[in-house]
Image (tube, rainbow, N blue to C red):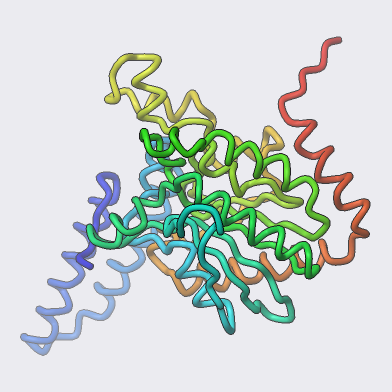
Length: 319
């Protein structure tokens, strides 16, 4: 895939082009310019550090949607020693926008359930651009119940713009499917670890988003509606998406301050797409640590804490 450049990354790209020109000059003219190259590399790092430490909420949304950002399946295939995909909801069809199956991560055997986008037009059509139909959520619930039956922890990775909003979804009762998942997740007596790796859009994310720990990557977002959808409602114009992103308080820092997530997983400088290997290793460390901690909590206490965690969200206290 050709390099994709976000608008605010252009200063870094310009410096990288100059660095390539400098190296080419050094090789063709046989002139030592190593000091200039080192200075240029440091300038690139500083520029990237400055840009990524001052991103607006809308720019973070753009990073979360970067087409070269690792998707959940990329992480699973990299950190699991095996992954056995399980298909179908046993009611209607196999939705490819939600994937699930058994996997081994370190010493833990888990049921991995995750949303999945495509990398090109063909795979995006196959996976419906990561937007699941009702059967996707029913498949996820079937697998989560299977995990609970055999006392297997559940790992949920989220990267979706939202559930598919079309007529077909309404005909097959998308709202009911998501609602049943929300209710049922509170009854599963196994550890549930949820991680938002990219986009966490609306009910499409919530459908597999109830867990004992909810973590989010540094430049991911989690929101009741997309910035474009919010802008279309409030300002009657999707061009105000940047203002909507700020108003929605959808960034990792905002969510942590409001108690809607339990932790932020740091990304490499420049985002997960700039160094997928480092991001994968960091994610694996967080998964193993949280699974270790959750596995030591008695099941009755686990269910109680899970209920209280979500029940306490959005509660207002009056003095």
